[in-house]
Amino acid sequence: MNAVIKETLRFHSIIPAIMRVAGSDDVIPLLEPVTTSTGAKLTGIPVKKGQLIPLGIGYYNRHPTVWGPTANVWNPDRFLGELDKTTPVGVYANVLSFSAGVRSCIGWRFAVMEMQAAVFKLVESFEFSLPKEDLQIKRQPAFIMLPMVRDEMSKGTQMPLHLAPIKREI
Image (tube, rainbow, N blue to C red; front, side, top):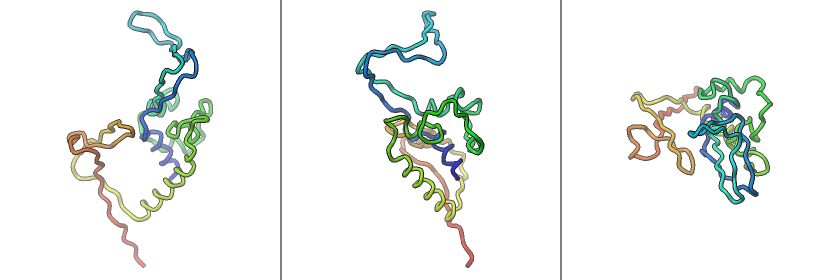
């Protein structure tokens, strides 16, 4: 169950990005140089004091240099073995879903325990199945990521799913 929760937090970040403010003029180094449209090579991005810097949680959580060639595949098995500790960034499972460092979410442990309890109770009580229609679910960024049916965006947020209570024999 924990591997499923970790992989879901990695693969489906609830917040697409967080903002930080540069405390001073600086240059943010790049892991690999980038070639601009003019042919210049950039090894860093200059920032000015007070400039907003967006940090793409979803990009980090699916970046192949961090998660390997299967970064864009939902695979809870990646959390069953030992994780590569060379890039420990996030406070939980090396994902940025709860941010990182001194500005990380102070309630991340409580949130993880709540998810564990909710998943346990839901899986214990219900059978889950997809609707018979072939629906394409799209992640729509807002303040948080929202699930929507691709051909029914005008209907707003929806995540079609069938639930049936598990019948227990006593």
